[in-house]
Length: 106
Image (cartoon, rainbow, N blue to C red; front, side, top):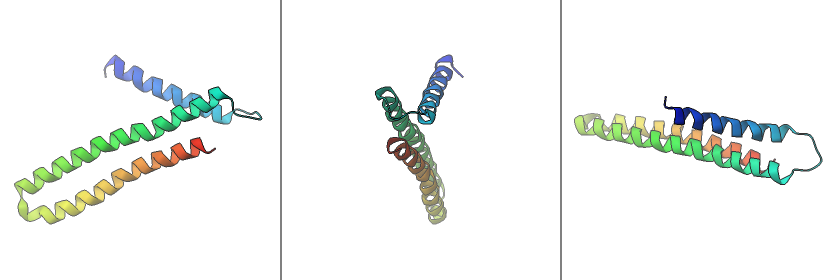
C-alpha cells in the first residue's frame, strides 16, 4: 500500500480510539472536547461505510448490467441476486448509522 493510505487508515483508527477513550472516561459531565470527538466519530461511522457501500453497489450494478447484456435469458436470476446483494450491502450502512446514533445519544 502507499504510505499515504496507510497513514490515513492509522489516523482514522487513532481518532476512533480516542472516541472510545472519551466514552470510557469517568466523570460527571461531558466536556466540549469529548463531545467533539463523539461528533467526529459519528461522522466517520456513517461516512466510511457509506462510501464503501456506494462503491460496492456501483460495482455490483455494473457487473449485473454486463451479465444481462451478455446473456439476456439469465436476466431475471441476475436481477434477483443483485437486489438481494444490494440489500445486504445497504445493511452495512444502516449498521454504521446505528453506531453513529449510539455515539450521539449516549
